[in-house]
Structure formats: C-alpha cells, structure tokens
Image 1: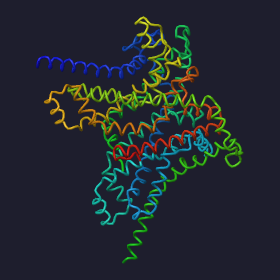
Image 2: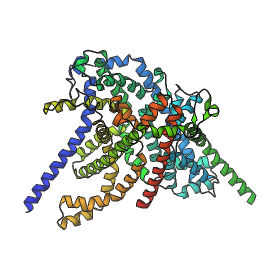
Image 3: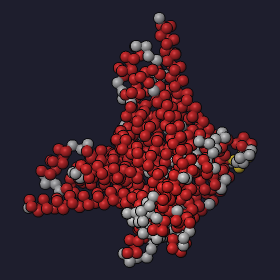
Image 4: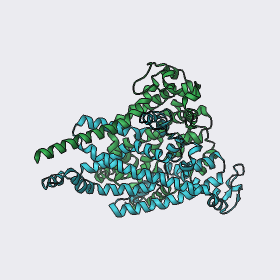
Length: 297
Length: 302
C-alpha cells in the first residue's frame, strides 16, 4: 500500500516536471529560433534549414545593421521617447498622488479632481477624436506625439496615492511641525518611502513606451521618424503579406524580401536587447507591481 | 494667532492645487477634449471645416452602422476572441501555477519562471514575427504537421483557424505572467490545511480540488471580475500584426475596424460613432466589474 502510493506520487511528480519543462520550452524555443535565424546565412534561412542552431554561422546581418542609419535613427527616437515619457509620467504622477491623499477638509476640491480622474478611466473619446486633436495641435510627425498623449497614466496616480496612504502619518506630521511645506514633505519624506512603488511605475513606463508601436503608426506619417517598434512593424508587413497570401517561399523563388529574413531577425534581436537588459530588475519588481495592483482604496 | 493658522492653511491649499495643475492640464487636454470631439459622431465631419463648421446630422451614422451586416460580425468576432482569451488564459494560468508550485528544485523553478514571464514584456510587433515564423506554410509547426502525415495548414490565411490562433498565441504570451498572482495566492494558503488533508488520506487531486482551489477562489473571482473590463478589447496590437483581408471574416474586431474604416479610410464621423458605441459599452462593463468585485472581495478596481 505504502509502496504503491509512493510509486504513484513519484510518477505524478515526474509528470509535473515534464509538463512544466515542456511549457518552458514552448515559450523559449520560438524566440530562440529567431536568434538562430539572425546568425544564419540567407540561403539557409530561405531553404528553411534553420532550427535551434544557426546554419552557416555568420554575423553578416549584424554587420549590416551597424551601417543601417534608419534603424539607429528609430532606435534613438525610442530611447529619447522613453526618457521623456519616464520623466513626464513620474513627475506628474507623484505630484498628483500626494494632494489626493488629503481629506476634503485639508484639500478642498480633492473629490472633484478624483472624480475627473476616475471618469477619464471609465470613458474615453476614442481613437479618432484623439487623432484629430493631435493633428490640430500640430504634433503629427513629432516625438511629442509619442509622449504627450500618454503623459498622465491615471491608473498609476491611483496606485501611488494608495501607496502614500499606507505610509505612517506620523512621519509626515513630524516634518510639518519642523516647518516643511507640502512639496518638501513629498520629496523628502514620501518619495524615499515609496521607492519600490515608484520604481515599479518607472519600469512599466519604460516597457510600455519601448514596446508601443501604435502611437507611431497613427501619429507619425514620415517613416523617417518612426520609433523602433513601428519601424520593425513596417519591415514585417511586406514579407508577411507574401507569406500569408498562401504562397510558399519556394514558389516565390529568391525574392529579396525573403533573403532579408535573417536581417529582420537580427533587427528584432537588437530591438529587444534593451528590454532584456532591464529584465532582471523587472522580475524583481514584478511582485511589487502585482501586489500594488490588487490593494485598492 | 487664528488669523495666522488660517493664512497658513490657505497657502497649503494653494500648494495642493498647484501640484495638481500639471497633471490636470494633460488630463483635460488629452482625455476631456477628445470626449468633446465625440460630437463628430453626430456630424458629417470635414477636417477642413473643423468641429465648429461641420454639419450636424443626428444619428445618421449610428443608423447606417446598424444597417451594415459588418457591425454584428465584428461584435461577434470581438466577443469570441476576447472571451476565448479570458477563459483559456485563466485556466492555463491557474493550472500552471499549481504545477509550478509542486516543483521543489529551486534552480529549475527560477529558470522556468524567467522564461515564461518573458513573452509578456515583449511587444506584439516582435512576437507577431515569431508567430508568423512558426505558423507560416513553411514554418516549424507545418513541418511537424507534414511529418505526421497531414497536409500543410494555412494557419494565418484560414478564417476558420485564425481566431483559434489568436487566442492560442495570446495565451502563450500571457499565461506565465498571469500565473504570478495565482502562485502568490497558493503560497498564502496555510500549509496546515494540506497536512491535515494528507493525514485524512486525501490524494493529491483531492487536495488540489478541496484545499488549493478553494484557497485561490477569492483571487480567481477578483481576476474574473476584472477581466470583464477587457472584453471589448480583443487585442489590437496582436490582431493588427497578424491579420490579412483573407481572415477579416472572423478576425476583424472593433478596434481594428475603427482604425481601418475611420482612420485609414478617413470616414472620421462613422469611425467615431463606432468608437463611441464601444466606449459606452466599455464604461458599463467597467462599472459592473467594479460593483461585482466589491461584492465578491470587498475590493474595488478604482
């Protein structure tokens, strides 16, 4: 009986290990395949020979990228955009979150502000009125069109506000008795206490801005000014159209689009590297983000 | 003395208002002005004439919208895809968190976690290339299919398969990340309950069913209520990067439709009308989700 149970439990454990490892591989291998393609020769890629190891190992695709000025232009537009977005998001969110922790007695109008924020989370004008607005403001094709419309992430205001509310009041009161004004209280007392929370919103704002291609798609009409993900997307289109229209690569012969597959793969790899660099930190704040997300007013 | 404190309080109030100002500027400009812009859904909007100069036409665009067979197809596609994602995604995340919790080897657990959380942080632009690379006619999946002796399947160009592909690849991207919250819920369950159940002779399945799942229930309900909010957004980024006219029949959703017809086709008024409908239904869903969450878990989404 006992032997039987331990056998079945051992079998169960092995099955669980197999499933978990399998799921890990299912997530990893498709991504790895792109890396392998980026290091393979065009001929091998076109012939569909590349699996998990590069075929005819070559770094020619990466050498081509180094000389590709449009790639780096888009890359830098995204870098600048991320920096602007992080600064703007963080400053606006932190500044707003503090007065909102006050009661209506201490801060008349607090509830009006709060309701305006909540309503804007519930309801929005939609894609087209936003596009017309950005156009009327003369922001089309400028980097500000990528940054300003998303300058105030409302959900983050509420997250930071909740975090501030969890900080002991006595710290703040002590500072006020010492003669600090609200801005000093915020910068000297609350912000240092809320470091993990602010780090989380900064990280998520980096990932969000870096990955966003949609603003670039609708607000940037000059391909020269595309941010990196919109640029990558514009590369995908041609080749996807060909593949999806049902033709196989062999019937297309040696179209130049297809031989670009390893170059495009290399561009994708380089475009993802900044995210991989911050990924260890992201993982550290993953739990903070989720715990914050679930603790509400 | 009282005068002085009153003065100081007023100055504090003023500082608070000043701190709100920069954010409120952006809120009014980029959230509230577009709401006013919705007027164009009731106009024949002509960009050159602007909102003030364009002619009001009442509900013309809404009547037109409901005469189109398209709109019902698009609502159906949106619901099929988003509900499919919610159901399968929730199931996979819960199942994965339970399995992962059984892994005792720390290194393996950490490695698997690092890998499965990664796709969540990658853009659909990047992942669409990965998906196309796997599922096109010469892709790895079709190589396996032909090895098994079947004909090649045109995953990306067959409107019967396409919604399944969208649901499946979204679950692939998100199940790892979604499992984090369920894993946290599992680790919060009192281990004493498991021990007691084991002593009573409960098998592994019985313990999962009677201890682990009930312990996770509050979080499962909370996440289910919150998922209501995403029911109208079937995932623009993903679908836009994977669909083609061949699969519009089952793959076109509200957001892609508004983008294509309204923005690319420059039917600004009609596009705004569809967008307005989406926003209103979205608001109703969000408010209900909030009510439901409060009832189920004493928490609020907003």
